[in-house]
Length: 490
Ligand SMILES: *[C@@H]1O[C@H](CO)[C@@H](O)[C@H](O)[C@H]1NC(C)=O
Ligand SMILES: *[C@@H]1O[C@H](CO)[C@@H](O)[C@H](O)[C@H]1NC(C)=O
Ligand SMILES: *[C@@H]1O[C@H](CO)[C@@H](O)[C@H](O)[C@H]1NC(C)=O
Ligand SMILES: *[C@@H]1O[C@H](CO)[C@@H](O)[C@H](O)[C@H]1NC(C)=O
Image (tube, rainbow, N blue to C red; front, top):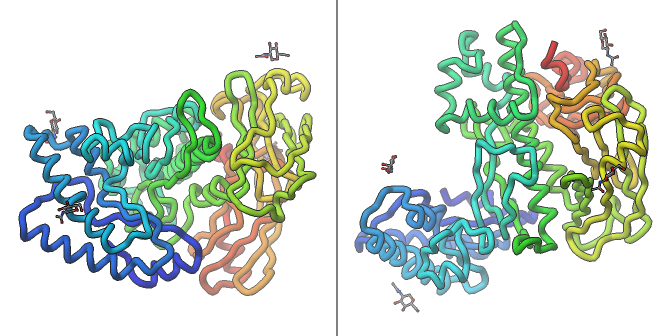
């Protein structure tokens, strides 16, 4: 659908830019006079209606139809004819109308597409997914998705994503007890993407041990939690790679100038690519997006034997989190079984001159030696800029968590809840060990936390809950729960 006035007005106000597709997607369309007449009316109407909105950044003829013809999704035998129809519809008609009515914005015929390269190839490129041109869409459900070097580096990734299940709280409303099993008919029925349920388990299985709780309902909840971890970690890994790649060209690829993950929100209670559940509750991915899309990002990764850190700054002015000079990047090495860091490195950092610049690199084996950590299996690296309480923090797991050594049951607990303002509550958490994927929920109370799904390396931390509906301290205390990764296992 073309969205409502309210939608575009809000986007204008919030500074959100919109890639506006015309309503053609993943199909072949006719070009008879009646149809062309109808789309001329439609396109003209929408451009006149929407062009005054500053939030519209680009008009796009269709979604994936250039690729569908180029890669012959529909087993067409008369390529020439379908290519000619494509040009008639999107170029001679829709592009013509758009460029006539709105000269202020770029028009791209399709997404993914190759820009001028596509034009030079007669509007249907041999490979619209070419990473050297225009944009790509990327989906791969077999890949080791927490590893940055399993991804391609395009100029712009305008779609990419991984699925996860929504919360038990939401599923419970549309199911009965017999359904609460990852292999139930209900779970099959709600999954509308082929082998999606299996793919999620395959991917998370590369990194985490699978749930085996003898209580089937608990096991189902554990699967939900792990699929959310997998989705959040995968899209974090991919997005950070894209943002790190925006100022360099390496081996002919790079200068990645955009990342739009698929997708924002759900239309029912089901597993999907969305980061917002039906009803608005945030999946773990949505909390991660606040970090991996934040204007200032510290992005660490291990490249062979070397730990590297890239600082990404997508803001025009230095601000509270990043000063012009005198910033410090702290890198801490923790042993999984100890809340006291083994070693802390401090590196001075000036505000960078380009959007993404490497600010640290060191031989990771040498770092472990300095920290007196016995092996990669035993340790985790934690990063923050200037102040441990900053939002600019990150971590690197040097090995898959299922092969890590020394992880303890951290016993994360909610030790206090206090009301700060109407609808705003502070939650104090304590942990007895380094704890990955600390996950808070307020069952039955709509709202969001200031952070969630994070790595907890300090014995206490304060999280804020912003309620979206009227509640009170006692109801919230009853509704709150917290868990972390090791709670899945015996
Ligand atoms: C195209 O042909 C392949 C191979 O015969 C088949 O698997 C696929 O389902 C067909 N696709 C369509 C859209 O008919
Ligand atoms: C589209 O514009 C081109 C160039 O101005 C013109 O040659 C062509 O006839 C136009 N097509 C239609 C359908 O108006
Ligand atoms: C990294 O450091 C270790 C230990 O100091 C050393 O043995 C190894 O050769 C170094 N590797 C590289 C690639 O420099
Ligand atoms: C968590 O609690 C269990 C049970 O009381 C205890 O055995 C374990 O040592 C605790 N974990 C830590 C890290 O202290």
